[in-house]
Length: 158
Image 1 (cartoon, rainbow, N blue to C red):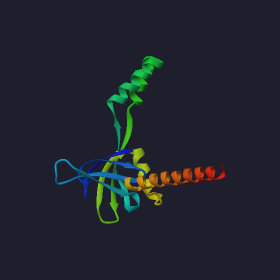
Image 2 (image 1 turned 180 degrees about the vertical axis):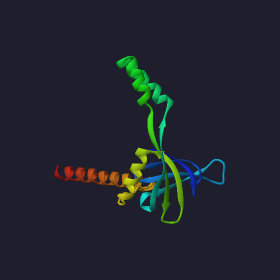
Image 3 (image 1 turned 135 degrees about the horizontal axis):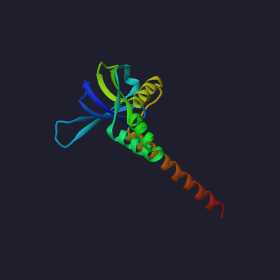
Image 4 (image 1 turned 45 degrees about the vertical axis):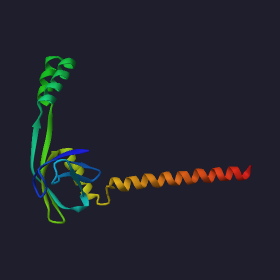
């Protein structure tokens, strides 16, 4: 599951996530206590383009790599860890959906590459929780019928 921050567009600003080729967006309802979820498949995206790329340096990652470098290589490792550690690339992109809606989002580079791959692989489809449950129930039913069949064969031969 990859996190995406929605900055603007036809969806509410806030965090959503990307998993198994789909955007999972939480939409606030009229009531205070309930939220609804919207799943948008990547096959619904008409186009996607990068609007900005930034190298971000996190303080925690920098300090952590500096400490590891200090333990392993001493002062030279400390300096190398402080210079190299904590870097990541943040990508801001615009996704245009086939129904005309747009989304301006920000995520890390790895997630953006996964989104692009899912768009190119249009055969991906995320099953809803209901569809997943039906699949599990179907397997259980087949197993129960198989066990009953095997028991019937065993008793008929005895």
